[in-house]
Length: 183
Figure (cartoon, rainbow, N blue to C red):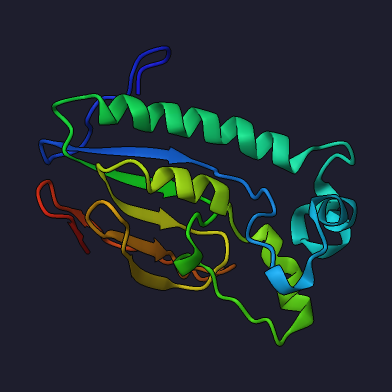
């Protein structure tokens, strides 16, 4: 995307486009049964996640997530309005969809940290964009692939790249410009 301009289709396939963002967690992926709340997660972030100690104490995860979400959604809206674009691949660092998460409610330590593993608020908005065919994310280090069915609209392919520290990984995704994505 050119600075200050609307996103344009990129890549070899006509009609396909890519939109991306760090995504950032907003605690919406928190394990529902724990009912700890956003203020609790913000207060304990430094002790719960690897990067927590490196972050400024006053950094507001939810405000940053909302700001990054606004930018991605604006890009997606521009692509939705572009008649040259028929399919959109969304790439984020943080997973956006429930099917991208690995829940372990029986493991309290994992369950507590799940709040930092996704942004389901943004994911719900991304799924409202009919041209989105595929969502690829990282962050959790656990490879996953799922088909997310939505009403209305065609299914979305959701992937998490299964790389880890010292073990990089890739995924290959073919974006269909008609009936969906394959990969």
